[in-house]
Each structure stands twice: as structure tokens, then as C-alpha cells.
Length: 516
Image 1 (cartoon, helix red, strand yellow):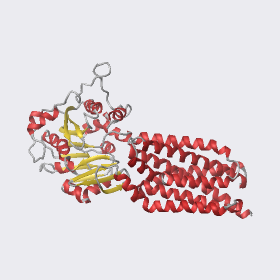
Image 2: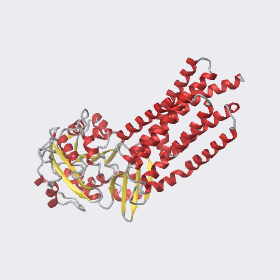
Image 3: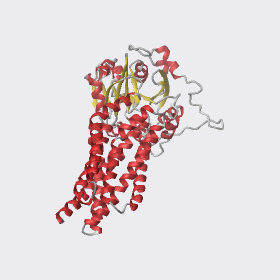
Image 4: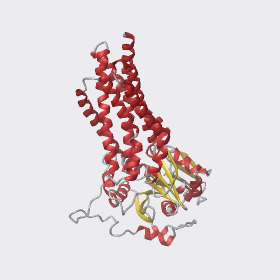
């Protein structure tokens, strides 16, 4: 009898750590789901973590009512966590595919609150049971709490470095659900003498196991059909990197690249975007020999740069090696970028653009900034005065930078705030925009230490869209997209400068894209 109590006691401590690992994995998994499907990672992680912790508080409060049948209560709580948490990612993709906008957010937040509440009930029940069979209250409680907190760290590390990059969000959820189920079944076995109708409980666990195992092996392929409905065209490639979800779609001759659900390029019209991004800046530079590209891992900006024989080096800084690997191996992207990243003039480094500029001692004649829109805190820092000051400090005296700056139509205040922020670094600026059918009207900010004279800019390389006669027109903005933005009183609105301390761009971006 004493030997069995020792085994039971030891497993309770182990169980508290294991369920804590599962709980933290579900918590960050829900944040990742929200970030991918709903956008704005900081907002979604904040909401899901807050809701999960609130749920845990509710669960801990409700646990006071669980005073009898502690073992059976714990077993069925784990059954519910396994079933609901295991199917969470799968069902989230289904909700996004088949229900109206807003339903997916409601579903995610409800699931987060429910799983959080169930997780909150687990630990108090384990502590009470540990106290029944432990040596002292203080010792049993301390051990269970230690296992719980240590498990939280392990769970976070497992999700970031193993589960998300190796298994993806659907398989990870099913696998973690199976771990919760396994804990329940082991508890069922160790405490079998305390339970009646244990055969029925084991049968329930077995049925749940079949569902979860089926989901582990087949859920991702079914979820892919759900996810396909999110995209306009058939998916031909999908992968989860350490940083983002990468999707390529194909419809006839139109190849599209998406990162975390956001369209990055369409093969039909990407030349319009990349020609404006690259050629005016190069043409404005007297001796464009050394070029820096921040972002642009698809190789399309580099393709345009390689049209200039006078360019000697192109340093490409892209955070995600998976994007560059795809650009170098996927036949569709290789055809688009014309093997640009394999050119001997191209040097590739995988690191954060901000950190690169902080540590690098190199100067450049041309700097091309082709980074994702500032839709979260981590990307916002790449649109701040501090970041543009670093660009200025790496720009040769006669050099030119060209910065993608989102849409002056869809995000008018965002675009002109970016332009205003670049100007705040004492660089001269010129504003461009171009119609890209797959994106809409898109804006760029050209910057130089010297005043920019458009009359001196001549495009002398082969292009599909851009020509000298067109260049001047790209600097003309309509009344509903220019910098003359009025407030509610009809007065000229004063735009701020985006900084690390005062990130004014984030709320502007959220508001601008709310209806698009």
C-alpha cells in the first residue's frame, strides 16, 4: 500500500509539470493562431494570453467546488482539455473557411477561455490529492507548484523551437492533446482502486485517443482544404518556418506568395512594384557599386539590380532563411527571380535588419528597403526614426535609399507618417506611388542626403513597365491620397514621427486597414 502511495505521489508531481507544459503550449498556440489568421500578432498574443489567464483564474475559483472524487474529476478535465485543445487548430481553420468574418475570432477567444478555465482547475485538484497522500501540506504544495512553473518554461521552449517549426499548428495541437490524454489514463491506472466503473472511463479515454490519433495523421491534410478556402487560388506549396507560414498559390500563370496570410507578390504584376522599388533609386545614384537590400528574400528586387553591370556587390539581409531557400529551389520562384540569388555578386545574411545596421560598418551607394508592413511591434521598429537614421548613417553622401511604405490609398496616414519620419532624419525625400493590380495603389519613399532632381533621373535598363516619361507622373498624388489630410474640423492634420518610444504608426495602421 505504501509503495503504491509513493508511486501515486511521485506521478502527481510529474503530472503537474506535464499538464503545465501542455497548458503553456496551448496558450502560445492560440496566440500563434490568432496572429496568423486574424493578423496583428501583438494584439492577438495579448488577448489570448489575457483570456487564458482569466480562464485559469475562473477555473481555480470553480475548483473550490470540487471536493469529492478528485481523481475522477481530474481525469475528465484532462479528457476535455485533450479533446478541445487537440481539435482547436483544426476547428479554427474550419471556422475561418466556412463562417463569416468575426466568427473565427469569437471561436478562438472562446476556446482560449475554456481551455484556460480547464487548466486552472487542474492544479488545485492535484494539490489537494497530493495533500491526501503527501507528507505535509507545505511540502506537497511546494513540489506541485515547482513542477507547474518549471513546466511552463519547458512548454514555451518546446513550442518555439520544436513543435511549431517541425509539426505546424494543427499537428502540434493534436499531439499535445494526446499528452494530456496520456496523463489522464496513467492517473486512471494508478488510482484504479479508488474508482468505480473504471472500464467505462477507460473506454471514453480510448475513444478520445482514436479521434486524436486520427487527427494527428489526417487532420493537417483536411485542414489544408479548409485553409485553401482562405486563398483565392490553389495552394501548391505550404510550410511553417521558424518565423512565419509560407504559402505559394497558382492559378494558370499567376503565382502568388503569401507570408502569414499576407500577399507578398503576384507574378502577373510584381514587375510594377519591383521596378519602381529599384530603378529610380539606382538611376539617382552617380556610381551605384555597392547595394544593400533589406528584406527581399524572394530575389525579385535583386533580379532588377543585376541588370546593372556597374553594381559590384549586393548585400541581402533577410531574417527568414526559409524564404531564401524557397526562392532558390522552387521552380516557380526561380523562374520569376531568374536565379538572381545565386549570382556571385550577391551576399546573403539572415538576421534582423535593425541589428544588422547597428553592427555593420559598411557604407552603400543604394539601399533598398523591401520589408513587410508595420502591422506589429517587431515590424514597427523597422519604420521608426531610429531605423531610418541607421539607414542614413550607412548611405554614402551621393547615395539613395528607396523604402516601400504601404498604400497611400488604403493607409493614407500611415504612408505620409512614414514619409514624415524619413524626413525627420534630415534626409531629402521624394514620394512615389504605382498601381499594382494585385495589391492596389502602392507607395514608396525615396531618400537621399542631397536634394533629389527628378529631371536628372533616367532609366537606361530594360523594363516591362517603367519608363522615363512615366516617372514624373508617379510622384503626383490625387486629393484623396496626398499629404493634405484634414481632421474632423476640416483643419490640416499634423502627422507625427514614428519612434521606438512613441510608435504612432501601429494604431494608424490598424485603423487604416480595418475595412480592407
